[in-house]
Image (cartoon, rainbow, N blue to C red; front, side, top):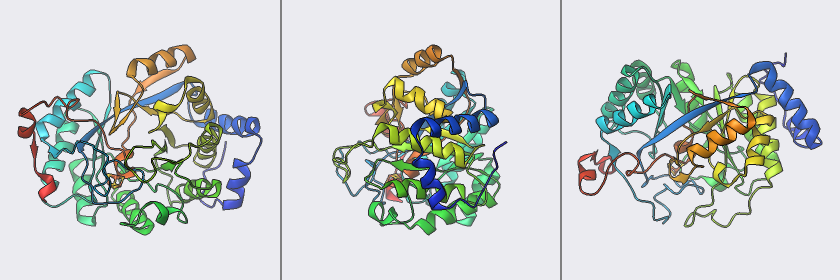
Length: 352
Ligand code: SF4
């Protein structure tokens, strides 16, 4: 049985990245089989409860208020609207419901609504997951008290490359939020984004930072950059697909018992690449047409691919990853809001 380690060195991680591809995949798949059913992939749904106008400057993110991406901004969804979506998710077989808000941190004014959403989702018998940005100790305690099961907060990239991507919050801020969540007894969902122009040593550094946390995150979303027009990374060179698969494989080896999630960027991966990612150790995806604000392969295509590969789609897992990592969910239309009636569904969180 592979060890759960928290003392990974950068050079040994780089040595894994540089293995011959087949050797790396064989090793990763062997580790995967020790901890998981290799023919099971968890499926998550994700709802954006507040979209766009975020004060942070994450260069990959269409929700940042610093860039003009023509994203339609939405205020915080009304609690009942969120619960309606949660009911739909439950009826479609989901057992966990993930909610993402494009905030630097929740305001005190927003917290009662957020807590109400958690209680409502729990009352439906669903697990709950949120991504709301940075948290204070008091907010973390309130979320835990309301019954929040998972909190997503991504590290995004290596400590060395981080300042090239975000200047409005620090790596230390992110680690502190993760510590608060962990100490409050909630499960941690934390990963990052590749394909942002980082070096291989940065991809190794991201995985090193995640694997050397006191407890491995329960779920590790690996996002492949979606180059959105209007963001500073819109013209970034796409990452070599095999390097993306290597990143999944190394994540699996470093964090053997964590769920590794194929997150944003799956739309641009062909079926063969997705199949390779599952072999390399990915065992969770987001399901549905939208992944926060970027397109996601149509749900039925996922199910068709699963059927062809003999994979069971287990509608359970979670995840939020993206918003704080930059990709918060769904638009108002998919939340059922249209036209003037939309205004009734929100209160003005942006004014907070
Ligand atoms: S990634 Fe999250 S924190 Fe950063 S700009 Fe986007 S929504 Fe805001």
